[in-house]
Image (cartoon, rainbow, N blue to C red; front, side):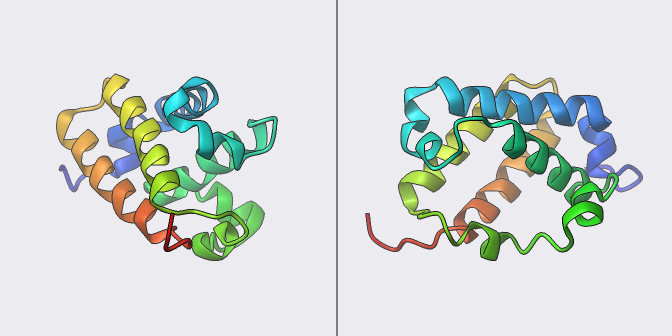
Length: 130
């Protein structure tokens, strides 16, 4: 990847990042492959969409929107109330990988994001047995 641009810039900034997050949640909301994952979320996904967008903005080198509003992400702590096992991790990754595959990002950006998201999703697991 090009070190002269942030990942945020390579993604395409706010507009493209929002589109990725929206597609991710649209898939989670409608795909049977994400049924158990969807059940962990509130009826409305509006707040989840906004928080993920804000987090990914700062995480990818764009504006630190999440930190400015909520402080340090503390991802593992904030996800502890939700049982996340292999199934939930895999469903989250299925939605994100689908959204990435449908995006117009450069192949190297897609692959980088898939690798990093897989690492993060695995780190979120807090349920050891299915």
